[in-house]
Length: 358
Image: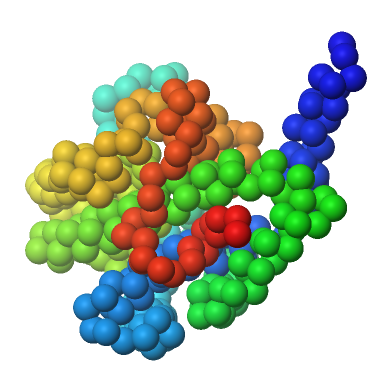
């Protein structure tokens, strides 16, 4: 192997090794960085649209959309979260044991004793995790986790707002990195990283819009059919809606359980029809139009991606698995240029990407 080849390999490997080392060292702050990125990628196009339609300055438009977001979050915390928490405790205390009792009764009537014992042993530990004692025991952990997420969300709002309000220090830092002695390291990783995070921004922006629409339709459906615990189930639907394909199935399970316990088979069928209609709307209308054909992956591919990425990388695999596979497919097929950010405002530097070299 020639000296030139060795030098070329080193020039490719060293920048990415350093990037992985930096990412690993910042793993405590991943949630904060990721939330800041997602919030910024959502707020920037909204502020740009407001500027175009009203003629307000960029800073005023940005302040307006962030103020609106803060008001929405405050109203959610005051009006929705307490009711959802109460209904969630009720779901774990009463509806899950009742559901398990109905399942056990059905198994006693329909399945031989040996088979029934195996089925009960297989699923009992999952049901015990939602028993009243477990719910109460885990309450402190849940409160601590929610408090940490609220703190990260608050800091993310501040960081993303400051970056978008005056992005000059980001552009200046990028220019200085390119011109310094180690600028070749930054130039090596800049293009692929920017392309990847543009895809991440587009996927999450579209998925959040889809989750909001699904959540709203599901909430109206549950209120119309009288399915109990609508506030708690709405939170579950929204959080699961951030997971492509698989989230639709996960969010349907507690809805159908609540319907079965409350209204029997008739209400369960109504709830099932409502869920199928909403998810059919997502699959055939929202995904093709909002996500776009160039990011629309086959459901089987999405499910395999989520299973494999969750196994190896946990929650971060669930969040970033689909964008990573999309980016990889773009690179393999030769479409290296990333799709533009959703409604990216003209003339406003993007939080998701450094500016072009000057």
